[in-house]
Length: 448
Image 1 (cartoon, one colour):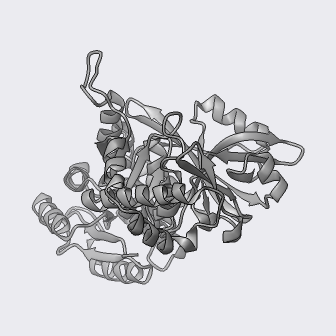
Image 2: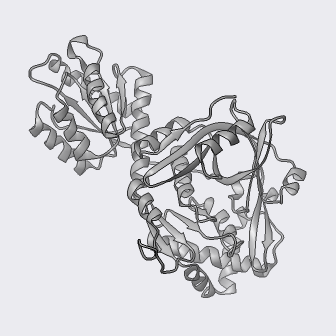
Image 3: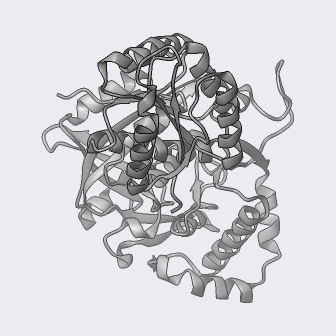
């Protein structure tokens, strides 16, 4: 994983106290940022006025920074800081220094009120570079900026029937697609399912046999016929070809009800290669999975929905049509490719026990998106529990400090979607910061 690239600039005023500390503050801060794993781009000059600010903005743009730390070495005017906000349009953290005569923290409070009024997200810190908590916050913004830039440049294929029709809007797209794409940045690419099946038809059985050998280490038990698995191998390769041809980061594929079992095995195989294929055409949760995977520096997510819950046992049963990565099971022989119709398969995965997970749920429209981000753990799933739940993806999810009925109740009250994405590890703070800079409202669960 590459280092996040963050600009560092110090602002000063010729009519305020404290400007003499510029060199010391910037050099010590840059050194601490490098030690924190940040690729720091230091402003080529101290900023005392608009001409200096524009020069540094041009430098930062050329360097391709993903976020910026703006240090108020002294009190400075709003119009000077506005230039960095408007010119760079990247996540920003304002840095106040602990010297009373500078009014540095007051300056941040003042400009922060302007940004709040404008609806522009920001972070801030107070102190010096040796403060570990401060530096962790700066590093968090740098990592968030790196992920935000990637989200804004995602290419997601919407795979499935999309006829030419409209009421009084776009022809073969929806206003919702435009809305989501304009607000958060991802490019949505339309593909018909026949583009995948047609490409799959060109692949020979002999080639499919070789593909099955390559993916054997993430296939598990097979209860489908060999003919079905050959077909799955061809669908996988056709999908892989589309990913390579268009530089796709994810796919939201139609599945239920007309294409059940067509993309499930492909989704499972591709997940452990680092590609997200959602098998219910859910673009928002492709993005949610991408955010969590990026926050973790890799790995896979499980996507499901609440099928049952018990306050007495303190867990929710999360299930889904099988399309999850084999690596989510405790061991490969617990993963099963089951028949789905005559030509498809769905993947049975009893999710392994994980001591700490982050789970999220995203929903919205009209430029107003919200995401619930919470922590919990997953419990072991017995063979009988897996069988009773339909031999598909089965997860026993326990939220931290919130009983299941309250989890469900709060999700319903907030109007959240029925899908839940689950990721091993604790990424709540970083994911929340990423979503803040994407202007997605972050919701948390209230304890029981």
